[in-house]
Length: 80
Image 1 (cartoon, rainbow, N blue to C red):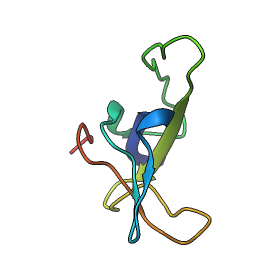
Image 2 (image 1 turned 90 degrees about the vertical axis):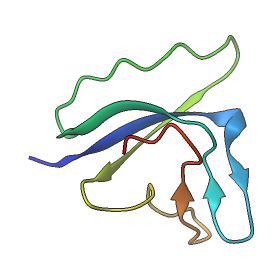
Image 3 (image 1 turned 60 degrees about the vertical axis):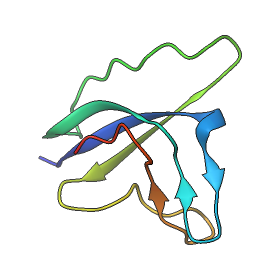
């Protein structure tokens, strides 16, 4: 069992800042549940757009790191 959160991020909301990757306003899809086997129901993106689906383990901050090593952090709408 892997407890955690899953979010959907509109790709056009993501901004690279000097100290982090700002995910913008995210949609909390799963909160404090088993993310390994969760069924998600993401919102429909506008035509021609994409959603990023990210997860994190319970008790951790942010959603991992970018390839540049910067933390990925939601501005609003996070699961907590």
